[in-house]
Amino acid sequence: MRYIAVVSSSNDASGDWSTRHSVLTMARRTAALVNVLAEGPQGHAEPGRVAEVLRAYGERGPLDLACLDVTRMRDAADRLREVFAAEHADEAAAVLNRLLQAHTGPLRLSSHGGGTPWHPHVDRDDDAPWDEWFLASSCLALTVLLWDRQLPPGRVCASAACPNVFITQGPGPERRYCSRRCATRERVAAHRRAHTRG
Image (tube, rainbow, N blue to C red; front, side, top):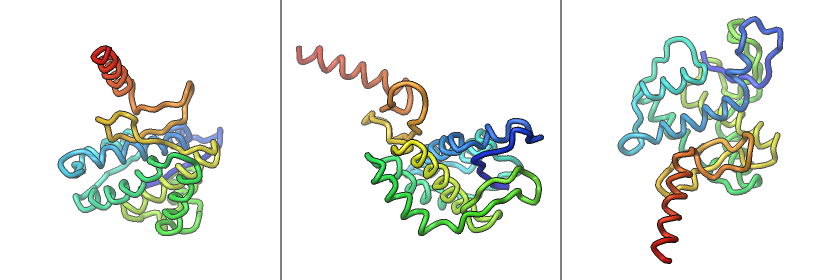
């Protein structure tokens, strides 16, 4: 079962379903998958690692990911990386519009036969292949974030040593790095460069 939810009723009997499948959570899942799919030699992530990320972001049931599924998901991740690389909302919107036009079906609601609360899908079928589901649901989440904030939904880490992408929405000043580790590493490197010159 593959799904994404934008909103869910507060009377939902499934507890925290709407929190686990919020737009922001699904966008963060997109970033985590883009990053894990780039891991390994020549970007060949292991199916088990991809399944771990999917489970961490709420996917349930058996996750029978074959190597071919992961290869196709990596191709989708490469397309989605363009959204994170966009510097401005207009550029991110142009990439998302292109992806939505080429890789999604019409907006529809699904409850997966009553197994989940109603939520939107833009993949062509509830049993769409992993890559189609990943690309379509990611486009939907990133589109809603861009719409809501009128800013690119994410970015690529500013550290030259890190190719990771991340979602920029959150409290505090705008982030430039995917993690505190990358920010600290860059601050230390800048400090060393300043002292070497001085």
